[in-house]
Image 1 (cartoon, rainbow, N blue to C red):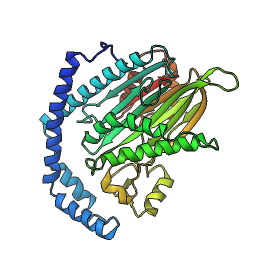
Image 2: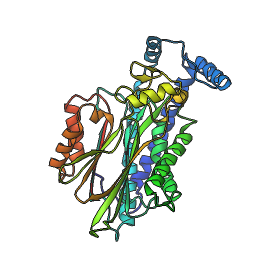
Image 3: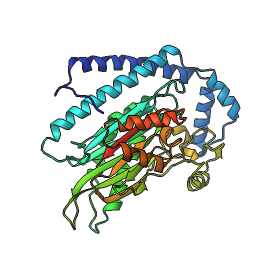
Image 4: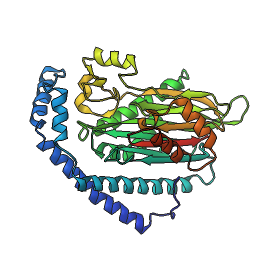
Length: 382
């Protein structure tokens, strides 16, 4: 859970932000040097020039084995790994303090849509040398979406760089709020269509912002908006849950009765035939279960080198209305879902929902069940 902090950012947190800035510069410079000194850099630039002329993605000449060999030659230095770990820890702590502080100031007199929120993330050492999972939580999402709407997001980066991930953490909430305000219900009352248009627009804008820095890296994203309202018939408090996702970070909704609903779609060619067909129909290819032989997901933010291969940023969007109080929403990265099924997670969180560390226990269960990936989980009680 979030820790307490004073009403204003204290000197300790200010110092942490300064440390974060210094570490960020160190890691970013190393990533820049690695990219431009990579033996395949000139080859990639030539491919990019060819694509601009021909208008279509050309197939890489290097084999998968050769690519793996070249990547192995560029191991991450130990000092950079340490810096990246500290950077992730500082960034998460500062963001948690600021979000919690802002929530208390903006929600003193307004009932919140989320009664309890628990999160936990782990790098999963020694299986992973860097931490690329993160989350966003705004209890009342004010000012982006108003005092009765909570924003929850789980992000899972890939490609070895946190640059795109950090940009999304800082900019995505405001973009989502802007798009939601810009798509009010139409005259015909098609609220669902306006919500989908808003979320699709938000993901597209975020993807465009990443274009300069996310050529060979990106992230999956599962975004939840939990809006408190009144049931039209009974006049009782309930919520509308809006979910948008790209990639394989998943979210489920568990009713007090135990009924389970998956809110997301997994955008993996290995498990989603429709996504495989879409990639192929757009001129891409799926090799060894990966788009272009490289990426395990077919939808993501960033990964601009694979846009002509069928990787898109358009999210799957679902809307659940009149969600009753006492329902549970669980969002987690694929490090959790790869080893735990929907039913198993639903049963586990229902048993531990009254415990503040329910998310930590869920992540620990995933690690003990054999997960070898970064793990992040966010549990919300409506």
